[in-house]
Image 1 (cartoon, helix red, strand yellow):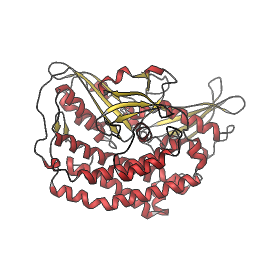
Image 2 (cartoon, rainbow, N blue to C red):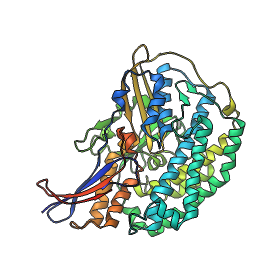
Image 3 (cartoon, helix red, strand yellow):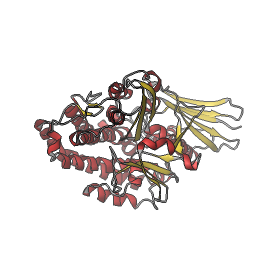
Image 4 (cartoon, one colour):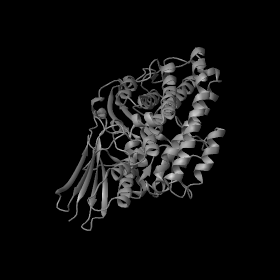
Length: 474
């Protein structure tokens, strides 16, 4: 009889979710689903608040990526005011966003995913985590933690604290970089470059020993979306939207983020609080697209800095057109970390970072403002509609994890079909399915805007809907 396996909780990601694996009468995987069981609330309870408060409010959506919401919200405020912010403010926002990308990617690669690479799928769960990594590879674990600390230091130097800095505001930023702060950042650079190089060495060895995973984990054709600069260079805070397909062909380009609703639809799933965005012109399922590091490297033409450009060329040798394996999100994160360190090094020489011209002043000049920025996990949209007094009438937030929802579902189904046989669900198989989700580094509190800790459950369900077997991990 057909069954359903449920993995609950999914571990080493931020938030709470479960995975259901559906088996047919022959014991083969028929389908799999990724369920997010947290509830979204920010869009509703922010109604009636002044738009000027939104950067501070929405930064509280998440403690991992508060800067992403802070900056996207500030950009939405810029649009409501209809101002061009001072050049210094734009450069300072960019510097903080690079720190955010660096700290988040370092956490994902070195602390959440490296235990699988280095300790192995068969290692007991009690040991297959950051503490096990510290015990087995203390120098690597320490280097990864310090690389994340470097990104957090940049955020603190600019914003006054590492988490939830009250710094980005509609029209600009509150404070500039100081010479002391510049010197502190500069002193970190040699260590940061060395740690990223260590990460590349680790992942190159991983690709040699994990060829099967690289081929199976989320390797399928899809669309990709991200921001790019006017000349096609990798972008993280500004630019226009671009969609490409799995052949590498551009199918939509030069899209103003304010027009995102013309291109992106959102499908509601009955078994998840997470919506499923898709490319409208192709509908479902053909309009499935991915965002984040893998997508950004597929839509851009170059990184814009020499070391990262060299790694991008090697990365693209793994695809025919676009690179389609979600396992290679890990490699894409390393390339973005390298680019971030290079851009930080280059940017520190800009005298605008010390300017006192940091903020444009204006009132409500437009009833709607859209702010888009590249969060570590992918493109983030903040869309606000206000009344004449600047009070919010409507809020829409589209977060990277939501945009990857369809792809995450397809990834767990692909992995399950390869590894699941009958109703036997050994721990290494569960971990491989979980890792398919970790490739995307989802942030479920961001995507559903709720409290809770991450959990994973696996259930086997028959065609009559009855649960035949269940495995729950605390």
